[in-house]
Amino acid sequence: MAVLTQQKPTTVFEKLNDETWRRKFLRNVLIPWLFIAPLLILHIYVVTVPAVQGIYMSMTDWKGVGQNANFIGLENYRELFFEDETFGKAFGNNMIWMIFFLTVPFVLALFAATMLSQIKRGGMLYRSILFIPYVLASVVTITIWKNLLNPQRGIGAALDNMLGLENTFGIAYLGRPESALMSIAFIDNWHFWGFLMILFLAAMQAIPPVLYDAAKIDGANRWDEFRHVTLPGIRPVVLFMFMMVAIWSFLAFDYIFLSTQGGPGGASEVIATLLYKNAFFRFEAGYGAAMGVVISIFAGFIIMIFVTLRRRGWDI
Amino acid sequence: MTAIGKVSLQDAVLQRGRSRERSRLLVFNHVVLLALTAFAIVPLLVLAFNSVKTNLEIGQNPLGPPINIVTDNFPNAWAKGHFATTMGNSIIYVVATIAAELVFGGLAAYALARKRPPGSDALMLYFLVASTIPLWMYIVPLFVQINALKRIGIDARLLLIMVYVAGNAPLTIFLLRSYMIDLPSELEDAARVDGANEFQVLTRIVIPLTMPGFLTVGLVVGLGVWNEFLLALTFIHDPNQYPVTTSFYKFVDRFDRDWALTSAGAVIIIFPVMVLFLALQRQFINGLAEGGIKT
Image (tube, rainbow over all chains, first blue to last red; front, side):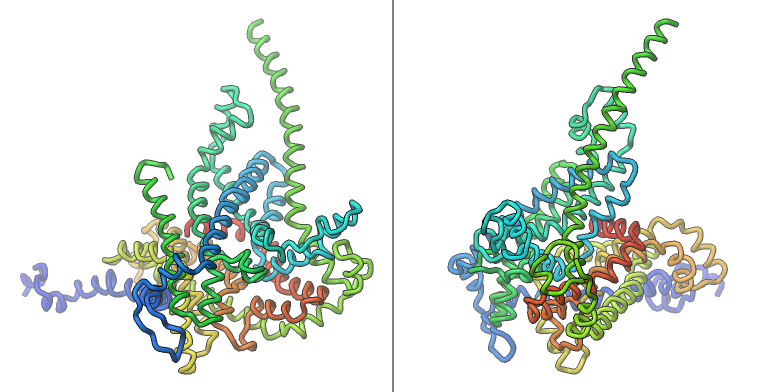
């Protein structure tokens, strides 16, 4: 008996009979997985299973509950890319949106974070106030700016009044095809850029001050300091946020849906608003699902670019 | 001696020049920052001003401070916007989501950080990949799925909370795990020697020591749910179950011309967030920054 218990169990049955092994299994495998299980199962049920279903649904002509779903292969995708002009227009708007958000908030945030990192007193106060727009709900932000951009009562009208002009600045920025998209991007950016600034500022404050001292000894001016100490120091964060913002540009929905619903005449339509309208207003479930897959492919493509660059030795 | 004297004189001159340059440049910094601060805060001030004006006054003075302060807009907006109901709903969504997220996320993160059962690496990879799946890829099938559950009588509010908890799961696991992984294991081992079981180790040792992580997740998730619009719009169709966001969206639609009323409604929605933000500035800012980088 004594010999048996000292031996390491070999078969499953022996293992199951071994008290210490059972307790180890319980403690190191079973209980940890029981701890993980609820969230994992919920996540699979809410995200992964519907995501896979979405791929299948995108290859059907399903038009919602009560309708038959016929498998039509890549027909939805063919229609999206070769026939549906609204989709082409929406894709173009997503690209404009991306170019805007990869430049304007980044320049603004870099500039403000640099200014903020150099001052000693009042930094916390500035930081908090500049961050406030980021904690507002999109419905509220849109309400505020719809009023401020109103042609009769907004900032533009006040400016016209002051300068003695008429209908020069006081125009319907959100109602005109040529300015709708940029106006919404402006509003979204008002909400968003403070967040970017906080990330950059945190990265700047993590740069060892001794590097700045060394740069000063080498006779660097402020631009040199920014170019050769600050920028390399915060590079990982900036590049990571480049990737995230590029992805987010294809997901943009709230601000556009809440202000113009993609109008006027599709001038501010993006893929997400088009998807929403197709799936939930016109019940083109299969077609909407195809747009969802396309958005995901774009997002995956952006991630791939970054992963490839990192593999090639870029310090991202 | 003379050489040293010379150097220090030069130094002094340099120093003076530099500090003068520095202070001039800091004036520039403050001017820029004040301008940006105004850009951030003035739209909010206009909103606050308009919430205490009459519509008549907004017509004549749509941007400036109020001449006569009226407070009627708030009770009016509260009643017409059904805020008593929707505030309650939003609080339910926020509190329930945070609670479920912290309980289930805490358990999962603890297992992944401290126990590392076989398959942990694969699971982390799963969450990493899954966190990149855009909502748009699964929203249509999820809508069908949720509707099926609603038809068999499951409360839509519970389903929305489920969606929120699942959507925030990767972020929660990454954040809490990163806090827990830094803990020295001696404390846990000591507790186990004293006879604590796994659950007691988690609740008595690990959670108290990683409280900042839980607070961060709570703030990030809570703010996200309070402000969330798209999922609530998609899954909640009974006005009695609306959160403040979708309810306010319909409210603004209905009282389009009534700026005094809608401004007051907007102030009501942001008031709780502002109070919490001003009370917990540091945690809010650092938490959201952390959440932004880790996801």
